[in-house]
Amino acid sequence: MRGRVAGFVRRALAWAGAASFVLVTGGWLSCPDASEPSVNVDYAESAEENYDLGMEALADGNAVEAEKYFEQVMQQFPYTRAATLSRLRLADCDFEAGNFRAAATGYQTFMDRYPADDEVGYAMFRRGLSFFNLIPESWFILPASYTRDRAPTKDALRELRNFLDRYPDSEYAPEARERVRDCLAELARGELSVAEFYLGQDEPVAAALRARTVLREYGESGLAPEALLLMGRIALDAGQREAAQSYFALLVTRYPDSHEMTRALRYLRFLEGREEEP
Image (cartoon, rainbow, N blue to C red; front, top):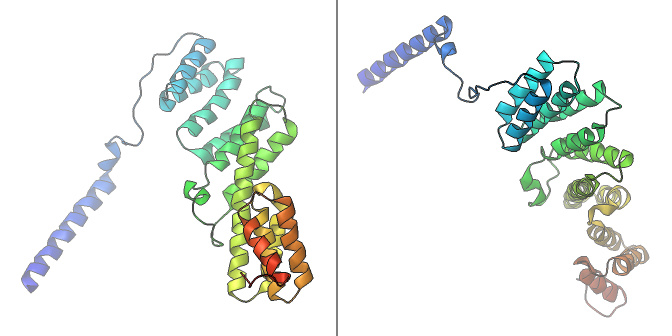
């Protein structure tokens, strides 16, 4: 057994030595990178033609090919309108390729260079959408966790709100508003997750502060009924029956179609002495 182990070690050292040799001599560096496919394109003579070819490639889902056309326009025809738009389209290429951080940077670069351009609104919207796409999809399905990093959600919310403030009538505004609601819901779920955590640690004051944050800052999230129910429960546990009653009554009045309304009614009947505590 010991001889076989020693033999394996000798072979492993030999493999490692061979790998080191290849790295030092650059043998692996000459191999093509499979993650960066080689794309050959036939360039046209004018900036407009190359730009159009890039747009066709982008529409067909060929972001790598489209990128080559847009880069060609910027390099060979830097003072044309097509070159200005090509800078924006390069950000679109990153977006379509799923490189959302690079896309967000590209849209910001376009806005910084051409702040008065007619396409700034589009760039603002797409920058917000880039951050939105950095939010893991599972976060909109699974219950929120207080340990999550919500930086992408906050970035998306900030950028999309800035866009809506400046371009409320844009053709992209309806989608932007929908994404804003999604961001608010995710942030609200996070606050409620933290509130439940504090309740589990027997810290009702901290829990109540988190629930109030949902009502104050994320009222459009759709989770206000859950926050009101939590506030009522906390007040009831603290012996503040009148405060609890007001929270439950507010929930029933403002959100009669919510799932939490049924529980709020049960709490109200309990406070009136007509039912056991839920």
